[in-house]
Image (tube, rainbow, N blue to C red; front, top):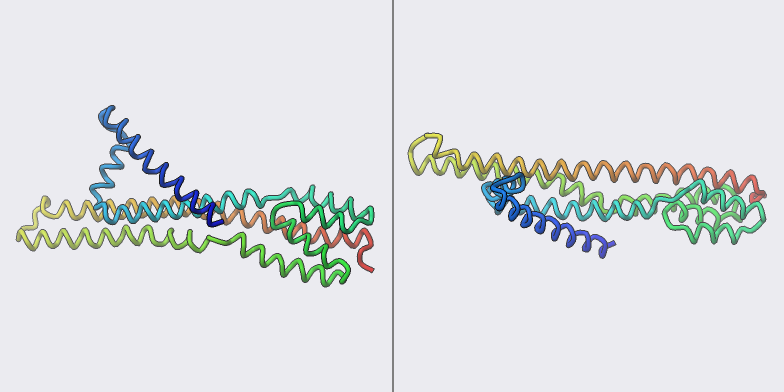
Length: 242
């Protein structure tokens, strides 16, 4: 998982900076454009804080992509899996059913394997094993979500920090000049507003990915619970509980 996260981080960094440079070149040749405007606003918003916001966005996207890839790999056709296990149990081949679950990737197959492994101990032991191992798989599915939540919270905070610092700079200019003219305070207020905007944009992007990941996890968990109930019924129907 660390290798996947690191690879995603490197890839996102290359893409972001590569696209920015390419967009800047195209915009320069065409006399302007959206990316050129974003680049200019990024620089105008005090690069020190804007860079922190950008790093937060890149790190958050790296964790999001790692989770999405992992969850897509973990998605299993539970109906087909249960059907294969049912056919093996109907033939009295418990070891074959275990092998079907063992050879299938994903948390659902792992939970079903634990249930099959405890078949000789009765339905209560099977249900207990499924619940216990299901909790372990839940923890693995939710791995990394706390970091995504952290980046969602940090991005606007960094923007608001830039806002406060920009306002402080504006008041410093007022104190130094001794005049409250708009031209004196405009620069500091502009920095304040730009850092806030970019911080909120980063948080919004990460929040969208976070909600998608949570919905993906909920779908996998629901399938896991349904297949676990189905496994107990299949085992009882094939006479494994005596």
